[in-house]
Image (cartoon, rainbow over all chains, first blue to last red; front, side):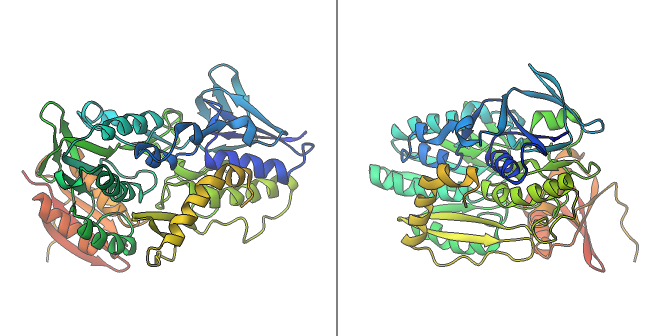
Length: 381
Length: 79
C-alpha cells in the first residue's frame, strides 16, 4: 500500500513540499494529496507593490492546479479538524481523511479584531483586499500624517513595514504630496525592526528621508472617530491614514485542534520540523512556532528537509544527516527606496550582515518577483 | 539578599530576540496592575531591551538576576 501523505495548505511551503514529495517518491510508494481551501496560490510579497500601484493583482495569484505536478491530487476543501492522535483530518465537504504523514502548511491568519478600532480605522497590505483598499486610499491622499506600524508580533515578512515606509516616501514624492505629509513609523521594538544589523542600515535612511521612527510602540487600541492610536506604553498618535500590520495568529484549524500554542503556532522541532509529540506530523512556514522570520523564504528552505524526513521513513532508510536538518536558513531582500535594495541572509547561528544597498539587489528582487511562478513553487531553485 | 516574590514566571529561554520582550509584553497585558512577573532569557539583547521597555512603559524593574547561562528579569506592573 502506498503511504498516504497529506499536505494541508497551498502556499509556498505546501505547494513546494507536495511537488518535492511527489518527485522524490514514485506513485507506487506514496499518494500525495494537497488540501487547500481556495485552490489558488497567492504571491503575497506582491501585495506591498499592489498597494503602491506598482503591481496588478492579476499577476499575484494563480490556479494551484497549474503549479502542482500531475501526480498530486488537489483537494479544494476546508479543513475543520485535525485528530493528531489518530492521524485523521476532517474536511468540510469530503469528511474524514486518514493519513500516514501530515504536513501542516496552514500559514498565518490575520486577527484584526484583536485590537479595538483597528479594522474600522486602519489600512494594511497583508491581504489582496487590504492592498487594493490601501491603493485606492493612497491615490486620493492629499497630505497629512501617515502612521506606518506593526500592531502585533510575530508577523509575516519582518522587513515589509520598513520597505513600505521607504517606498511610500518615494511614492508620495512622485505624486508631489510628500512635502505636506508626515510619515511616522511605529515600531513595537527599540529599533526599526527585529534584525539589529538591518535596523542599523535602515535607520539612517529613515532619518535622511524624513521618516520619524518611534520605538516601543505596542498598539493597544485605535480610536476610529478621532483617528488616534494608543500604545500600551501610554503614548497616543494622531493620524490621517494609518497602515498597520494586523496581529497574526496561527490557523483556526490548529487552534481548534488544540495542537498549537496560545497563538495557534505549532510547537515544532527547529531542526527536524516535526511537531513535538507527533512523529508523523510536520509543520512548515508561518505555521510553526520557530523564532525565525515568518516568510516564504523560510518555507522554501524548510520544504526539502520535511521531504527528506518523510521520504526516508517511506523508503525504510535512515534520513540523510544533512538534508534532513533545517539550520534556520532564510534569505530575503529589503527595498530601501531609490531603486536600491539589500539582501539579508541568516540562519539560527548567524545573524545577517547586509551589503550596502545597491541597484543590483533591487534588480535581483524584481527578477525574483517575475521568475517566482516558474521557479519556487515547482522546486526549480 | 532576598529574592522578590513573583506571581508569574515566563520561561523564554528558548526564544530569541525579540521573543523574551514580546513574552513580557504579553504577560503585562494579561496581568492585573501590581502583579510581579519574572522572565527568563538567554538572549543578550534582553539585557538592554527589557530594562529600556520597562522604563518607557512606566513599570518597575525590580531585579535582574544572573543565573548561569541566562538572566531572570523581575518586573512589577504599574498600578
